[in-house]
Length: 129
Image 1 (cartoon, rainbow, N blue to C red):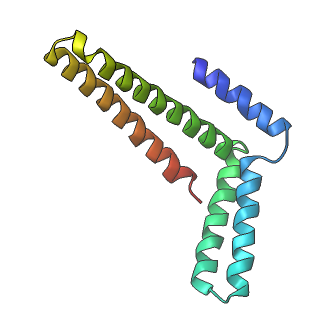
Image 2 (image 1 turned 90 degrees about the vertical axis):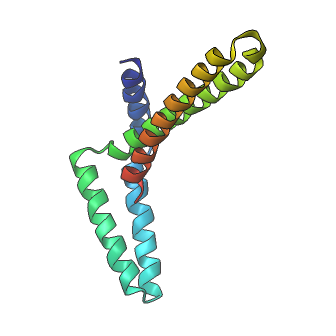
């Protein structure tokens, strides 16, 4: 719930202070289309035009679609960093706990980190265009 509130506030700030991620994506793809047309790369041009239509469709449904994806990506990256710090702290405490306890905590943190990385990968796939 707290993350959702932060996401909404950051999205509103991004909207208030300039171009949205949708605008930037559309602009970036249009530039790539111009470049590929200038170099007679028909296959790339068609691929980019399809990507442009997808981005325009996503942005028509929700003008903050890619801003939200970008913010979600940042939050997941922060979660991964936090877990990595916890793993480092756990290594320092290794001598003060049993091998079984250390191994269990280490595995739990690594599992948690992998789950977050999978979610992050899905976010990247969705927002990649």
